[in-house]
Each structure stands twice: as C-alpha cells, then as structure tokens.
Image 1 (cartoon, rainbow, N blue to C red):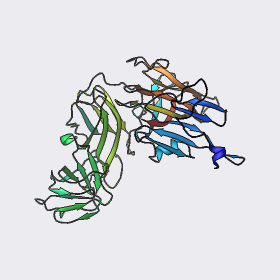
Image 2 (cartoon, rainbow, N blue to C red):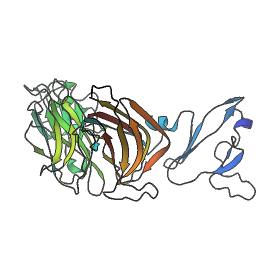
Image 3 (cartoon, rainbow, N blue to C red):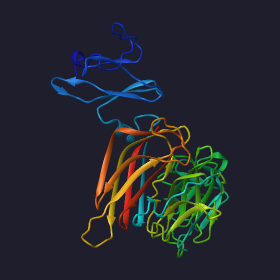
Image 4 (cartoon, rainbow, N blue to C red):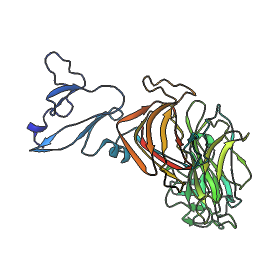
Length: 402
C-alpha cells in the first residue's frame, strides 16, 4: 500500500481542516472527509485503505489500555476471538426447551417452563437424579509446593492416584483465589503432574486441593461441576462442587445471586451427567440452572451482565420443531428480552423488553446484527417462546464482553 493511497487514512491527531478541531480525527478516503472518533474508553475502529485499484479492508483500532494503534485486515470480532483486542472476550449462550406446551409462553432452558431469576443472594445446593453422578475424593489437603503443571504435598503418598483423575484447587474461592482444575498425567509419591496445566493457568503452589477418582466403581457420570455466578453486587465469582448423587451438596459460599454458567468439569467413564444435575436454592424454591442427563453443560440461555462489563450481542440463531404429525403447519414465536429499556439503557428490574423477535416454522432462523445490541452491566437476559403446537426449541446467541 503506497503512501499516496494510504495517506491520512490512518489516525492522525495532528492534522486539521479549516474550521475544525484536530482532536481524535482521521481522514476517510472513502468519503473524502475528516471524521471524528466518537466515544471514549472502548477501542474505536474504521475501514480504510486501497492498494492500486483493489480495495483492502483494514480495521484500525485505538486500544486505550495499551495506548497503541492496532491495524488488521480481518473482522473486528475475529480479532476479539484471537485475543488481539485487550479487555474484550468472546461470549456465547445456548438454550434448549425440550417440552414447549401449545399456546403457553416458556423460556429456553433445559428445565422447560418459565425461568425465575432469584430475588436475592443465598446459599445454593447441587444434586442429581442419579447416584452415578458422584465424586469420590482420594485425597485433599494443602500443597507444599507446585508449579503451573504440578502439585506437591510432601506429607502425602499419591500412589493410588491414576492418570485421568481430576485435581481441583481452591474449589470455593479459598483465600480469594479462583477455583481451578486439571487432569493428572503422571504420578510420583508426593507429586501429581497435570501436563495440560490448570484451567486458569495458575500454579499448584500453596493451594487447597482435592483429588477426585475418575474410575471409582459405579460412579461413571458427572463427579464435579463448576458454577459461575454473580453475587448481589453483580461481581463475578465461581465455585466447584463435588457431587454426591441425589444427596444435596450445599455450596460453601452463601452469596449466589445469578447463575451464569453450570458445567461438568470431572466425570467417570460415561464422561457426562448420568442423571439431571440441578443447582437450586437450599429452600428448593428457585432452580438456578439445570444440566440434562447425557450432557455436560446447562443449556440455559439466561444470563446477567457482570459488574464493570458491557455485553454486545452480534448474532441470534434459533430453531423450532413440532411433534404434530398432521399436515397442518405450525409456528413458534421466539424473542430475546432484557430488563434494560432499549432507548435509555435504564435497568427496569422485573420489566423485560423485547430486542430480537422471529417466527419459526419447523426450521432454523439466523440473524446477524450489523449494529450489535448493547446491554449494560447488571442487565438480565433471557429468550422466550410461544408456539401454537407442542414442540422443541433451541437458541444460540453470540457476541463479546468488554
């Protein structure tokens, strides 16, 4: 790309045009005008540049966190996925309702029916409908040494541990540390090697640990689950719970308010949940999340934007299938909604507004948002459906958090 064709297409805060200020400006070769970058804080980008007679799309991003100009010729969202845009992470949620009832509104989550967001933070519990979903602890304690791929306890003899067993660290945010897990690849008397590293790239040094037996007899299903949740201040937190079949295992933490993720992180030979895994309030009144038997994660589209974050939704893909065998066609109306008024962004508590809405008839609909939907921190999100005949529905929404 020559200087003559590229000149002034990049950001140039020192250039001015008569009658205009020179702050945060760039010259757009496409329009032939000086333009201002609006907003502050978040990275900004434009498309610019030509090479000979061939137009080349180039995203030029000002990254305020690193105070640098980043130029790329791939879509902005691709750069987010590749970790090239600091402070941004890919985001996605899936939902599934296995039992829509005709002419009755329901939310897209595996437990079917309407999802109720908890009214306050509380202790919760996890249980299964199958005794095969049980984690048997071989060892627990505090490590005396370790690294990103090892855990050492000089007071233990790990000789009964086998490769594939799961090592859990600080399962309830012990000492304020993020819970992690990894899988044993080699065993020595006092040392466990986790060749793939721990889940958040942490160290095995000075951690509370639990070793779960993958090959425990009659324990082929889910053995431990990870809960990602928000407390009453909407701060993001985590807890790992080791299961005990149909016996409810209470969380150590008592500040669970919004459940954003619920998934299996340790399992026996079946490698997934044998029964339905549930996280619910200890009173049993409100179910926070639900993993269907035969799966490894909750298919619950409900989500709440954490404190200090903004969610941008870029796509919406949904499908509906009906069980009626007659020739009559049936339809399902599906719509995303959030408790943020879409003109002001005001949090409206238990009042939800629709954002994207489609009608599906035994097929799939995909919508890409050319202008992403912006949802501020503390916003509750869900997707609801109502069909004229019994059936199933599924949803996937994607975007990024910053």
